[in-house]
Length: 112
Length: 109
Image (tube, chains in turn yellow, brown):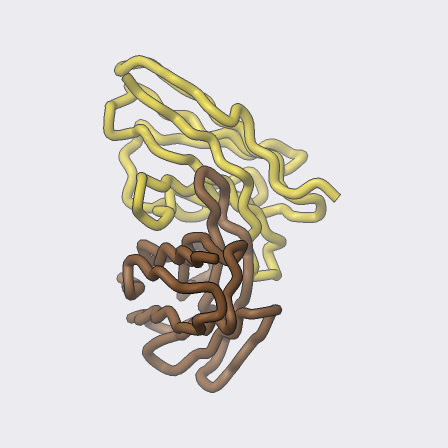
């Protein structure tokens, strides 16, 4: 059983560019959340998707947007990249009735 | 807003030297306290969920306990492969996890 998979694993972008990160949830999971983890910090909640709708959003600007597809996979888009957006971006999935979230291996984004 | 504070920031142990990690939290209505293990450059790996004060869970050399204000992760007779960052998180609604900054544990052989 494949767990949560994210792509790509590493990415280098230039300031001002746009980036799209992808996530496939664990089999049977329908709820996907995205987190940003800066070096030496705990993950920070960006937003959560359920039934293709954004259900809650953390304290992140509108430059961060997302989407969930009918097969429950999800994308995170970040526009007008800043140096401070450099971080490990994590996707987590769970069933809506189950509180335990399982994480992917993350996408390391470096903005130069 | 939910607050999670973990201590110490870093812990260096000799193999076999037992110790405890602390997670203090402030939350309006706890719906779960979670422990994760994270290896460098990887995503967090789920360890335990605790729901109510007095609850305990064990897995190999790890034991997690919960009170109304804090949780402890006890590592008994650690081995080098237990070296990792241990993250604590709380959930107070149906949606997000609020994480602490983690405790980085290094176990020397």
